[in-house]
Length: 445
Image (cartoon, rainbow, N blue to C red; front, side, top):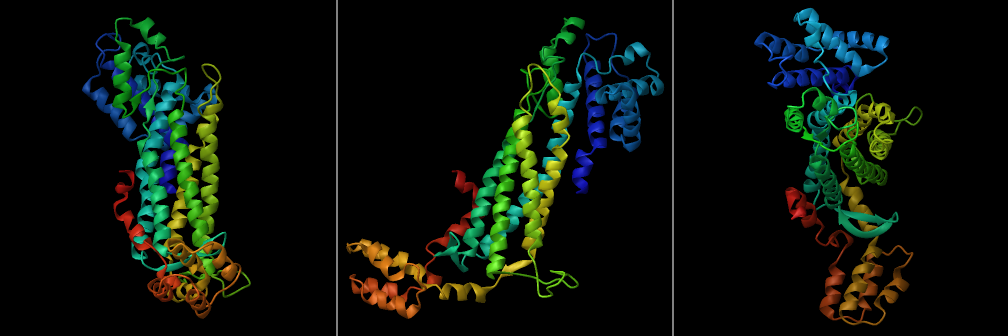
């Protein structure tokens, strides 16, 4: 969890706020109309860049001390910056007042959180999420042709392949990862109620729309021109909904892997010194998939709550989002832990070919679908009902199935084909379908 802590910790939030404050001051200094501020000297600009680059826990602690006195987290950052401008660069107090000029705390916060979320996605979460998908994709291709008894409603059903069933998860995850990647991250920079009023009244000669837009875009974000005091967080709702859906598929994946282990289709490798049960020595429990399921559920609950509540703000501003936003890192962390656990679980399982083959051979009744469908082709009356009477609720052996085939009113070539069919062969195009994940882009064309 260390990479998530580095991005979403309290220290990281203060660092991002400080970086935004400094960037705004530098941007203001580039506007020729602001003669009272004037352009920055090269030493001053280098010093400001250095402050941002070297901002650490010591700096954050000073800001927290200021926050204790001001009872305002962003104002504390402003005061910290002003103190360094006057104390280290020798700026007169009047010039230092251009720190936090004409903006409100939400201008700072929305850019800070946007940068944190973007870093969390690009540097940590997306590589891990895609890593899991790629590992499952590799297994899907490797196991594309391994026959497996399917289970609908938990009961024996038309056979499939292990690879095809894994490929289904790849396809589902890819859909949600595309949604995550396509979310545009906006930034609001419009003052107390989103009107840029303080900027305009101070320097009416400045084209503030252009100035603000260029600043937001310089921070790597898309300018959001129409807001209240707060950026409405709709993009966060889109993103967190998509991340929650990825997690929902992850839970489904973990439950299926758990079931396949329970059925004996997958075997877990045994680790030296590991204990599966405090009393039953034989146990090798699927704890990685169970842990992944639990943490994906926690992440989903947080993501869904954030998506449902963050876009709602009473009139032009209320602070309910302020506390909620503090939990973004926790949501990312739970999700990241779930992904890590699932990858660890996947790494220690392998197909048990004997168990897969034995289960198929023990359930010849799953060929009932094939029989009644071929009968339909040749116009046999009530084919479904005939096969239902012979097979429903029964475990059919190969010899019993052959007896049913012999009695069918279908051409001899059809009888011969059905007689030669086994559950392991009744997999349709499952191997070819599994291999579609080699080029996932074709699904969207």
